[in-house]
Length: 110
Length: 113
Image (cartoon, rainbow over all chains, first blue to last red; front, side, top):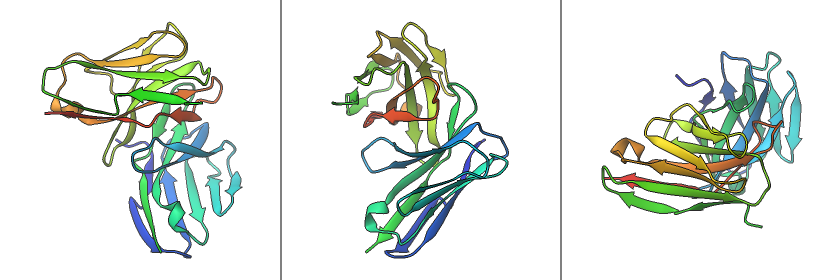
């Protein structure tokens, strides 16, 4: 049973379009992270959200933590080919108990 | 500044063979982790070490053993490899107090025939 469900699992769009990726759970998390992973490399941390309703921006990426701290979204504005990769959400439920979603594989076509 | 270094990067084993994946970090982090990544499954925690001298089981520990040799090094051993252990293995480190903020190595791709 996957504690964190990501949708969509695959997304292919044209450069310049906007997109949103979702990370949902029935469990409450003390924090939630988003990572990006490129082929042949390990995941790289993009952001941590901690407070319910929190919104963080990283250039063209906007991350939101749900009010109940059970879900999160990642919105990319004007996607670029460099945004291509596997996006993973991860939820913290206390020390050492981090669970990952299955990932969203994003492809941005020039 | 290498960060988190894993060796080997690729390995092919026959069923029943043993091997050890090595991980070394120069980030001076207390916590170290071993994850496996399989298609459609995300990352699953195998074992972790909160500090030198301690290790604990994660979500999928069966068939694996670990050793926290010192603060820098955390190894993962497969005593008798099985095809179900074919996967990409990642070592990660983290800072105490920020359990979700991990720094990953580049991964070790293991195939068990």
